[in-house]
Length: 369
Ligand code: KQY
Image 1 (cartoon, protein in one colour):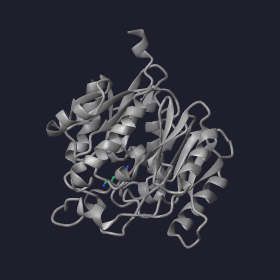
Image 2: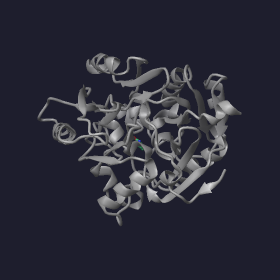
Image 3: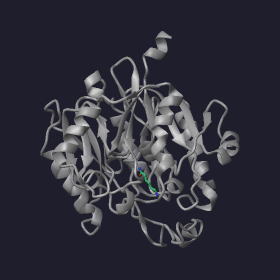
């Protein structure tokens, strides 16, 4: 593996859309007892269900700590690759490489990771094992790796359409705990040079109470160039209303990199989801303090889905809008099966299906070997 000091665009590389073909997917076996209740067993069952669906159409690699390897190996099907790799938590979207392609080969980008805000408002300390994962994964996959560790970015804070346009939120990328010495223009230039986009669409904010400072992948996602889904509520008394309405206004008043107007498909939110005292009791304290309080609203959203080669896998919350969300997504993904899985045990960790997955785009060089 070579560590590259150039920018991906200098070498003709760009980030493909999630809905283009993948060669695989990376996840990290959950273990952190202050993130995942009851020793992470409920989360492990939910991860396993998800992994079984993804592996119907992609090769799945799961990273597990030394002490969890045997159990991961036992719970996961034999065709899933399990590798021993240390991590601080289990958010592959944010700590695995962001992959870029030149249409033939793929390379990884190793961003700086500081647990969503470092000492300013990060969610745990230390985070050094997570910060090393992208490089280790490039090594494992035999892919060259761009060194972007001097720029703090998580994969969940950006979405691209693979056709020149990127969406993100100001709430996250301009937050004090990310890159406070950079201006909005400098951040935008960095995104263009690293991910090969020509236009950055800045939404104001993400989902209410999202502890990532409003990652875009929980509120808005491309379903194809020119089409996005936006998490939506009609309830003007819900603090989410202003947030979603702000995003809608921005999206309706802009065009993408190719000059297209953007069609916004509203995806209803589930009724607010609150953590119970029983669930909180299942979480260990962190530095002597609870990580969640009973009745706290969790950042539940159907937008946090994963697009695999064969499926769109959508979080479900035992809510009356579960089926509605699937019905809205089905015509937007005519070539894939849109399928829901119960995701409360992932949500309790603070994210959802998209946050725990990282796609590896198709690598054409694999076919010439
Ligand atoms: O949503 C994500 N991408 C990560 C959430 C991290 C939560 C940590 N408790």
